Structure formats: structure tokens, C-alpha cells
Image (cartoon, rainbow, N blue to C red; front, side, top):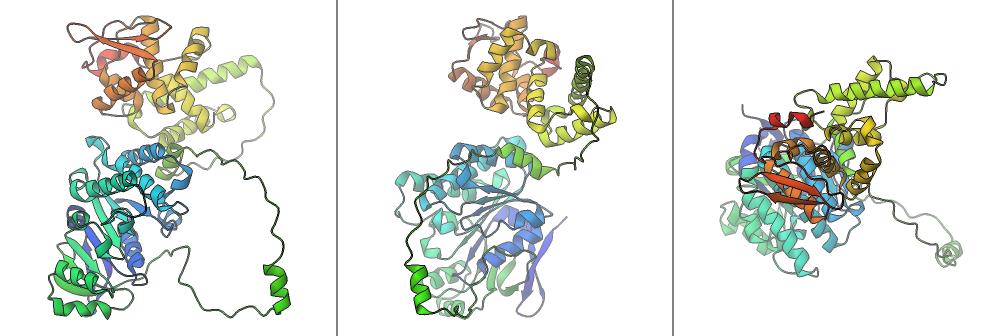
Length: 499
């Protein structure tokens, strides 16, 4: 089935359609000077294609954050997250198929390049199982793939240029369709621009940019002057997703708008000169201690909220106090509900937000609304459950030590460590790669092996292989060791570790 989205009208008045499936295979380059309607074009394309394909926008000026309110895009403020956090966010957004806007507003040029490169790296490096089609829109692409070195460090430039090159040169096989927009073709790295097969060229005035635009559209040099005469919102289109011959079109209206619109002329305030002097030259306010920066929000929680709308949890009626015995009995019932949720075949690979919704509904059906844990507590319960730990085991002193050690790892790895610890304590065979991947919520066996390597590098475990390739894992200091286990065994053979 061909999906055609309407971009506007041709100069002849006919609808101008863009073949979305062809665009996913061939990529797009947009050029236009400031004020040419370039961002309006991108917004129109994103709005029209939002119901059909996952999207992510690299947004240096915060122009596209309004897409979050209308179309559900997750807005990620890059200033609040580390490069490593953004790389993980890009990977998780791809896995869970969440459309995102990476807002780089407020960062200097070097940090914009570094954080954009990290996020694009997460999109690019995700496992093959998650190579879903995605539009990756990069506004002001000359900032992230400059033709010449600028004031930023060589390291930042190489990181950013490498990520953009991967997107445009190698992204197609991974389902990534790059859409890059620039004010100046001459400032954009040629190896990045050359990979696009579709072009939308707007108004431009410099001879070098007009000549290059004419070359890309297959026009004669004497026709390049036409780019000076284009009005705001008018573009020349060419490419397999647009038109086989250069075609003039006007971009249609959009449903959303940027936060900062076009400046409007307005009269100056009527104020006496002396009043203005008193205001402008008043003593500066006293210096205040800058408040400590708040901790970064959990991107995984945000992704889950963006992927599936949270249930509206209404206040429950106030219940009379219950006895300790009744509370313990209710918690046991909550544990049974959790086990029922995890018993479903695909539970290991469903996002936490969806699992939590089902868990809350089941608890309400069982009359357990008053003891339903919040999302952070549910995540901790899920980690213990996937490791096969019951409430009785978590109270053991030895398990308290294991929990302390697990807390040294990222939260999404703690369940894997605790599952291995349980196998070691009980003397069971070492979990297979398939069992470790499932506990992590992934289908990738390679990722399971990388997880073990990472945990070993943190000094928490020691992995050993015997002569026939069976793996043994020993917990450092505790001296617990698993029995030898086949890393390539099917997960069904690890039934003793299941919840």
C-alpha cells in the first residue's frame, strides 16, 4: 500500500503529494534561507506523516516542542541529561517506538553537537530486532555536519559529523530515513548532503548556494536565478518521492506552530525619559546563590508515559486502618497478581508502563486498590520478580547484601544481577544468554553477553568457561557460584529460574 501525504499545492494548483514509503528509502534534503519557510515545511511533513511512521526531531532552537501536545511526541530537554543518558534514551525510544523531539535549546554549539551525536548514536546502534522505520529530522543540519572546522573542538565535530554520516549513509538499512534541513548548502558537509535523493529548495540569495541547488535539481546555471524570486513557503521539488522533474510547489498550512512566531512591529511604550533612566540605570539586584541543579528525570519513565497514556487513577475512598495480618495477606495477594501478569508469554518484552497499567487494573478487580504500589515501587517489585525472588527471600540478610551490590548497577541491569545471584546461592546452572536477555527485556543474545561483560567489569562477578563451553559465574566476596550452564541453552531449560 502506497502512503501519499499532501504537502500543499503545485504552482498549477494541483495537490502536491509526497510518497512516504519512497521517502523512507531515499532520504530528503531541504534548503532555504532564514524566513523562506523551511521550518514550516518540516512541520507540515511531520504533522502529515505522524499517524504513519515513528519520528524523531533534532531541534536546536526548540521550534518543534509543540508537536508533543498535539501528536504525543516525547520532548527531551537535552540540557537536563548526560550524553550517556541521551544515548540510552535514543536506544529505548527506538525499541519502544516512541516519537521524540530532542530539544537542544539553551546549549552552546559544542554541547549541542555532542548531545545530538549521542542521541543519534542510540538510534543507530540499536539491535537488529528493533530496526523499525523512522523519520529522523535534523533542523539546521549545517550545525551538526559542518563543511569546515569551526570554533568547536575537533572531538565534538568528529562525533557529530560521524553520527550524521551514519544517519545519511548507513541509516537506510536500519530503517532510519534522514531528513536534513539547512540554510546554507555551502556550509553543509558534501558527503552528508550527497546521500539525499529528494530535494526541496527554497529561497536563497548567495550565488554559491543557488549554483549548488541548481546542480542538485539538474537545472542549468542560468536558471539558478529563479531561487531568488521564490516567495516564503514556495519550494522547487525533485526526487523519486516527489517528482521526476523539477516542480514548483507551495507548502500547505500546519496544525501546530513554533513557540516563537515571526516578530511583529508594535509601538514603543510611552514613557518619560527620566522614568526610563531610573529603570535602566537602577542598582543591580543583589547576587543570589545559584540553586543546585535538579537531578535529571528518568527518561525511561518518560518514554513509557509517552508510549501509552497512563490510566486516570481517581482518589479511592478512605478505608479504616487494617491489621498487620490483613496487610501481609493483601501484599501476598498483590504478589500473586504480579506473578499472573508476568506469566503471560510476552510479558518479558512489554514496556513497564503497559505492565503497570495491567497490574493496577488486576489489583482493582481483586479489591486491592488501597495497597497498589506506585510506579517506582512497581519497578523494584518487577526487578525482584524477574530475578525469581519472593518476599520471604528479600528479607534475608544475605539478600540485603546482594541488593546493596545490585544498586551499584543501572536500574535496568539490577534484575539480571539478582537473577544470577539467586542461581549462585541455590547452586543452579548459570542462566543462559536467552534467560538473561529476557530478564533484561530484550530478544538480543549479544546484548545479554554485553551485560555480563559490563557487570564483570564493575567487579561484581567473575565469569569462567570450562573445556566444553559451559559458563560458571561467581559473585565476588560472597563466593557464591553457579553450577556450570550452557550459555546457548534455550530459555525453556531455565525453568527453575522462572517466576
